Image (cartoon, rainbow, N blue to C red):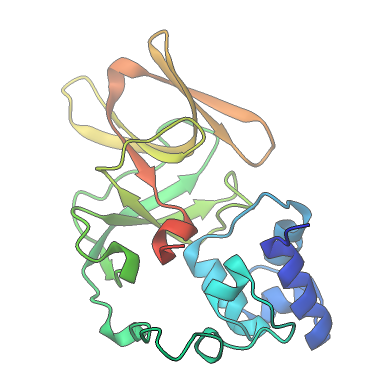
Length: 229
């Protein structure tokens, strides 16, 4: 049976003698972050949460995502063939991705606003080198847990067509077509004049957005896409 990220996290917790809530606190996250993640085998943490959990568990993000044959989960560079290229250092990744605001994890449509300008700039993951118009948002609220937790950073690609099942940012407009609000959720369907998004918390909750108010639908990149897995 193929092991999941949750299986590998449990292995490291046992090896280190840590509890899920204790590891979460040690990583600087909410006590409930890892317990919630472990309860849902299909859940995938955001990039910020993944990085912090990997650090406290003593592994790399890539190992936590994909696993390897080493039960001690040594760092990735110790497991690469000698001919494999060295990964770029964190400092070599340009901090050129604009953060455009916060994405409130709310059950209400239009729950957060794009700030009308760049509020921060963050590092560009190596897999996104050369990608055009990538932007980022910070998550607030809990309706997308355990996939995204408050404070997680999500990267958005406006040029990658979203499909049903993808997490998306839906930008909405008012009557004069000025973009004022946006929503984050899992795209379920488009049709009948509405766009239907689902949320993770509580399970199976949904919001409906009038299609005539939609200015854009942008795909939120998965952790695998960010790391080129």
